[in-house]
Length: 191
Image 1 (cartoon, one colour):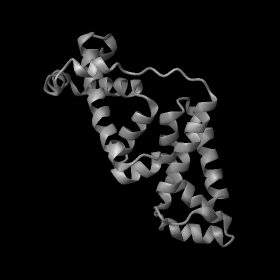
Image 2: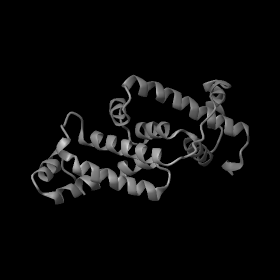
Image 3: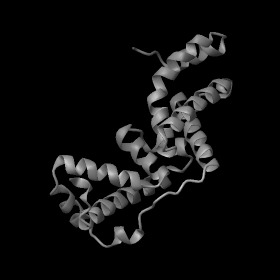
């Protein structure tokens, strides 16, 4: 389906045409779910939270001022709603040790990883991403998988652009370190 600009639908909804909200949902539902699911691990809960995001956005649509893109405003709601939901639940998060990162040079890490098959690399990356703290996982996902720029990511998660740049650098280094650590431990996850 070809969508019009978000502003078209927003104006129609604010004018009383509530059916025009549906294309906004359809247009943005995948990334809203992705953002929420990176923070709320359970797919069922993530789906419920994503629905809550669209309800909140609908109820507050008249507050949208157009200073940022509608998608950025919506994704910020998604992020905040997911964070609020996860704070209500006590979740144990596994994080990577800093010394994992510091024990190897970046070149050594890349060489070890590049020696694996594409299938093994994919499994390794997926596992390393699952170990990242949720916000780090979301930042990497937004930047690489959803091709959001630094400015938009900073608006979505409420950090300065410089903080996002620093976090991206550290997260990439953590990922490399975690993948290398997994290779060194010869985890049978690659089989």
